[in-house]
Image (cartoon, rainbow, N blue to C red; front, side):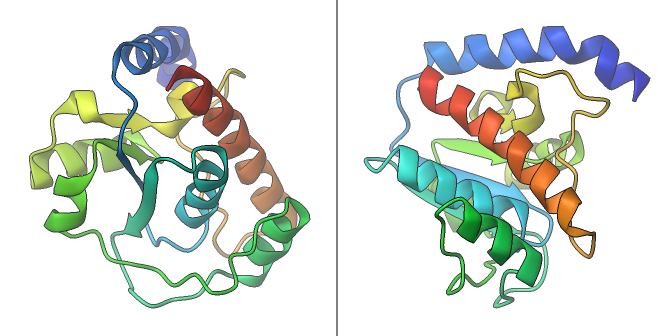
Length: 168
């Protein structure tokens, strides 16, 4: 918590600056651990906001899994239908084809950078875009949590998406 709170402003400004300087991506990849809660939601939000950009999502585990009921409910309240979504694995071809990769925490950013050889300039931690400072840089994983955790995580992702869309 403390390091993230202390570094928030610097990370936020750096992420905004980097995005404002880059060309609008043709393809964007959203990554979270299981690809069933956060990344499918953010994928849908970004697809709606940027129809000219190819937006996909992927995760580190378990291909073919559906979005959990609370995620479906919160998404539906926001006009997004994730009922046909199934998780996809993070594989080199998907990573290689993305102009910009949005991850949910710093560990995921480091993994994508090291394991897939993606330059840091092509990776953004979603929480760094949040205009409201948080105790953690990471977007909380709502998996197997109460509905209010889904609402909170998706609210934060909405704020991050709004900044991302505006800057691109």
